[in-house]
Image 1 (cartoon, rainbow over the protein chains, first blue to last red):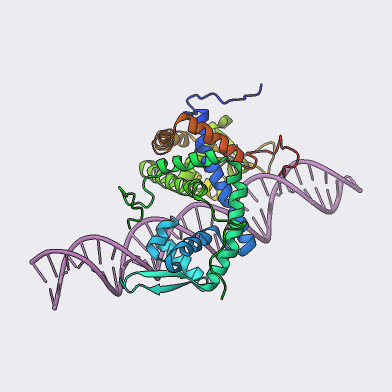
Image 2 (image 1 turned 90 degrees about the vertical axis):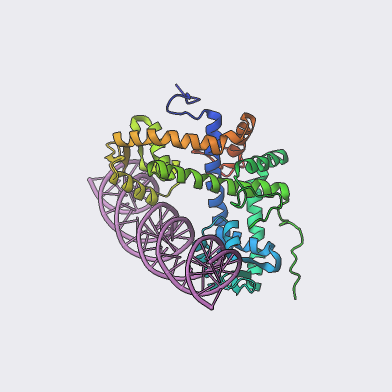
Length: 169
Length: 169
DNA sequence: CCGTGGTGGTTGCACACGCAAGGACTTACC
DNA sequence: GGTAAGTCCTTGCGTGTGCAACCACCACGG
């Protein structure tokens, strides 16, 4: 006999609906990241994390960002970001720039090569995100997902009680 | 000098709705995994990956699974699983068992200590998943999410029922 | 002026992971 | 039966990451 539905017994405290929502999130995220990372790596030799960094820098004024803000944006530890920027600097995609208003601080600034690399990679990445994720969803579903994430996320920056004035750090 | 502004063409940047859906997924996943992993580690000294392995084994017949199936279930490479099972075996939570029907294969089987540890950890983990994720969503949203994941995921397990034109495997 | 506490970034270390290669075994095909 | 190809698991190596310790610096108070 074919068990069409596993009985929600003691061994499965999460019912089918909850399980599909939760485990699906895990699997979808893993699957998407793996595929997008592979695509980006194959086409431009760029890991996904690197792309994220370059993109945030690109969207920032003067194409530069403070190390701590960058780390927070891409959800990486400070040390992790230090190493990542090390690699990108070695590859000539970013440069370090000291901060005149705070001598402790440092900026990571996108170089011309970094801008060019990002422009190329962006097409690949956006196409991948659309093809593998967004196109599978209706506009309403995307909207609903966005709402859901905002409820799930504690505070999009770690700053507790962040005001609508967004950037609080 | 080239125009630095990329015109919104074929590789148009994601609009607000798409961005919220996509970036929200990344951030929500990271946030949830981080929090749940920390909870589990603090309460039972168990990383999230370990919990997943134990749970899949627990739900399997005879509390044991083939290494390759286990690796596939938790989205880990075979080598990664070998190391993970090494650690779990060292800690006494699982044991290795040779497979009589295929001498190449090996089972990972949950020990009594593993079952007990899992039972304790399960409460923590399920509470965390509900508190941080499921409770933020309505039943309809959970249902919709489950549907969405199934569309996003390429082929959860096998390629049976693939429609013509679908890239099968 | 000099401490004291807090912050920003880097470094030492350990760890988890993937890839590629290897060994043991099975299956398919001559 | 015997060889070739494929599968399953493990091992060597390189890499990316976080934590904790560290130094340099800011801000504030004696």
